[in-house]
Amino acid sequence: MLDPYLPRLLFIPLLFTSLAMAAERGPAVPDHPAERIAEDVYVIHGPLGVPSVENQGFINNPGFVIGRDGVIVIDPGSSVQTGEMVLRQIRKLSDLPVVAVFNTHIHGDHWLANQAIRDAYPDAKIFGHEEMRRLVEQGEGKAFLATLMRMTEGAVAGTVEVPPDHSAAQGDELVLGGVTLRIHYEAKAHSHSDIMIELPQQKVLFLGDNVMNRRMGRMDHGTFGGNIAAIERALATPAEIFVPGHGKTGGREVPEIYLGYLTRLKGAVVRHYEEGLSDFEMSPLIIRSLSQFHDWVDFQRNVGRHISLAYLEVEAELF
Image (cartoon, rainbow, N blue to C red; front, top):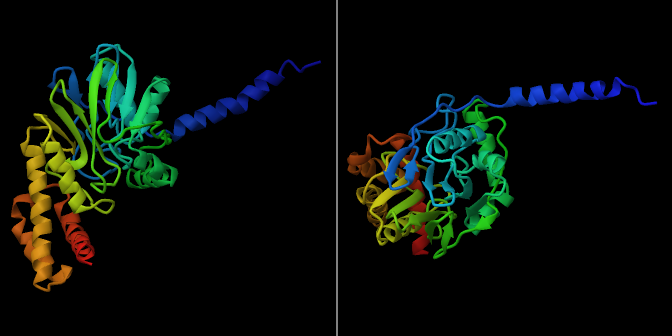
């Protein structure tokens, strides 16, 4: 005869396991307002800077488009907690389901929140470039998540990888939830996996980290030449509103200013390289010439590294 107490005894360890899992989750991310940038298009502008205990890893610009039949999300953020915050903002404006998510590139602060979308909407399609999908398979997502855990002291705990399950490539045009989207891709830009998402009807272009506004990102995974080409591609579109990966949305001035930074820095490196200077010798000269950007967030952290990377790139182009 089956012991009548056995089901209860079996339930006890399950209860403790569930409580332990709940305790291991990081805290909820506070609500950040969704700003309307065009008809039915919204952006949640994240804090500038690197992941920290204070910002709980939320530093990017999640966006969403409310279509006739569903919602499209672009770069939902860095953690399950951030993704849940994004969903709360969507539900304030629409009861329609999320039918698709687009991830602009491999860096986890933009896509590890996919988990929250998939949990709430299991049928939602998640798009990313094929190179991003390959990099996830190689472990880049796990590495980024470990970094976020360290930098936020566990604020993103409970987050797991949910990578793209659909590919988006240069020139693709899709209609999802009644929204038309056009994909732009330039190899070896910010991360080698960067797509930009154009909404032609609304004249909006989501740039990913190919462009940042008043913030200096790292260039370890990309190239200056590719990043410059990506911005030129963006500026060749009919878009009038540009959403950077970090920083405020704006007009053409947003990509133009970042393009100016990249071209001026690389041009200076080329000039000083031809003069025979090492990257160490040219660095203070170039930093002084970039005074327009000195007040950008993380400028001091990254500009020296940018000069060294541009130096190696120029050297490689010559040989």
